[in-house]
Length: 409
Image (cartoon, rainbow, N blue to C red; front, top):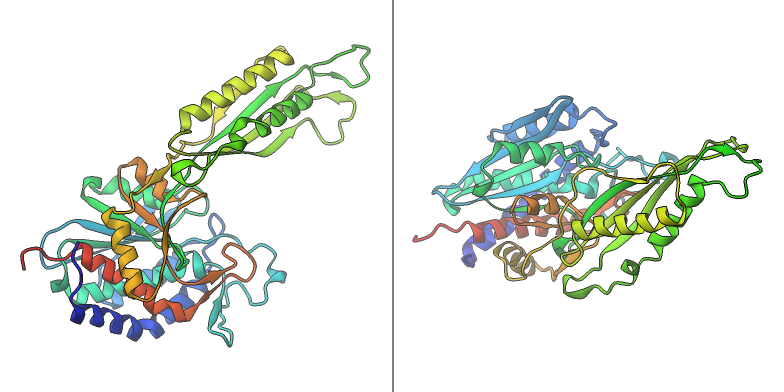
């Protein structure tokens, strides 16, 4: 990794400042193209991005799945061979929630007197898409400033949890060629260098159907059995784990309980489902989570036997936890660039998972977060501070140039 010459650093900063109005214009167009995960047609927002990139002289390509577009990919090659780094940001967004509670329409992209733009996806992550588009254009105009390749990857199906965009991209490229991925989540105060993984499971407990007024003294009631399971899981020692060197502890959350039939007061339920989300850490991995569930369920089954044994169904593939070393080239370049641009972020491990976990499972390093100042992400009146855009753009541009410096010149 190389420190940028003063002249090149100044050129990057000046370019980012000159791009601000254009970034805001593109962001406005993106926000006004609704792209709620699993709800909206993605074609309009994909058209906004691909049209802008083509007008900038770039050659984007659209990855498609069975139901339509899943990602927009664009490669920018430097003047000499070298590694590949990816700038990733999602094009789909969360839903609006109660639209009547918004001060500004979720697709208005209105800007208030203090310079905050409102709209769903402004922070997560359409501003990163707009910024990364401009970085790609700047790099394409000056290939002599770097070696290797920078790829912008704007994926869809992120907010649905399907992650078809990133999966499709990984399936089409040689992942050994990927030196790292910058994921453009917002927030200027931290650089996310890790995250807890997760395992999600659906547990089905069984009882014995009967009339609620039966003369039997004791009937195996699936709902009561499920309640015992929930209490046992909630009281597990996992809840009292210390964070340890990873920075955050593992965590188990019961997320739903379903059983019986509404209004069927005369029926003892014979089946109940409990869904569980377990956040994983290096010292409490997927195998440990499975063991915890099996042992806890076995104790409940033994205390409340039924005609059928309870079952555990893993929902989707688990994601491993990940954490990059503080001196890993990827976060080191981003942290140094951010500080040179007036920020003072700290490296952190996030409690929630992100696609960095998915990438870690493929052996690909990633940072997941550093971006503009924001508020109300996924909530009512999501907004970003437009004034923070140029310095964020300059940060990522500088980080890439330091990682992709042409050797021996």
